[in-house]
Length: 569
Image (cartoon, rainbow, N blue to C red):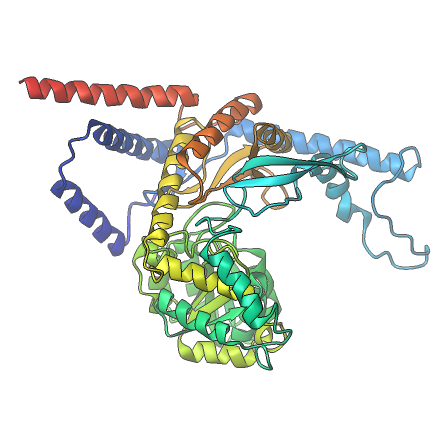
């Protein structure tokens, strides 16, 4: 599916970039080669995508699942199910020893759970359990230390060997590289323990509001360009407990089908009617919103008390970026409210690190509820909601997260304050903007190389979350294990976190990654991709990393020769 209509903000940005590029004369052949190669790559990419893949805007792509890969994946799950049923029969017959949990209640009791509920866990997940939940013993920086563990019973239990495994970290949401155990942020967090102690042990409405909380909320509101903000000690609870405060029975929630579990839970707890629209599909959103307004409440047929559109900034499983300008236009047209979750976009996206609002050049006041977390770009914990002062005051008085949950720990708070000061440049340095630009450069470089090598890469070119499709559960486990053998720690994801044919590896880039680290990772991905057969793109012909580099070098030499010829003439 293609889409040629872009927002006016995007057009202005493109015209501005074109004017700047015409004004600047570049004489370095390497820079010219890189730019020419990039333009050639993008133009070829656009033509091919419209024929065989799904295209969202000019910088976002979702390639169709190859038919052969889909067939293989369904066959793989069918075989696993057949063997699972057979092994369950052996367990019930007493031939195979049962190793999992069992309901030991008397026969006349209602069972706590049905045996089939854990069918997938017993027969699929445990076979590849060694790829998940690996314990770590260091900060999740550019490199990470894992505690080595072994199993003698096919992943039903593990034991530690006492060794540590050092690996390049491509699995943590350490977007700006602030997950450090040294530096100004860590020092401020340690000092806060002496000044405020470890925790207030009280909710915000009682004795839990400290001076550092107020300082953080004022600084955050200034950073986001809104009137006020309120912080909470847990990011998940920020969504789960505040959405029910804002909407209830008689209200309508329009939710993206790929929204995070915290948004889904908060929507369900609210008691509001929920309608789900296709991922990032503004046409489907508008059609369902229009229909809901016309029909009214399904029982009473009365108008809705409130209509809330709930979306994310960057979708962490797809790597896509919300089409914010179009959604803002729809929300204004139909007088709805907009709830924007910027957990993965705040700090990581936009020229100033202010998230997708900054990325699209929108007015933050056009978003009614700005939500975000401090667990990704800020290297800390907790979440926030920002917007008008009236909204923030209402949440402070009525939200369960404010009434009953303990307030944010002072060391956590000061970690965020110092990180914000660095990003905003209030520390009299350019370290914050350097990290933002470094992350953007790493994202562009890494994504471009993977696409050229023939991998199916999802998402927006500006997204630091880079999903590469693996499809089959056997490849999910094999790729993960092979990468760790080469010293690269990655996160692989499969059913039920995704659809049956949605198995993938999710690379998370960081400003702390150097070019040498990315090259090492690409070399490992190149080799592991060949061994597992996951270079399945129908748009870009599969190539090795060596071939990609040779093409780039050849293009650089051609440009140098042309420039030399022009000088001689």
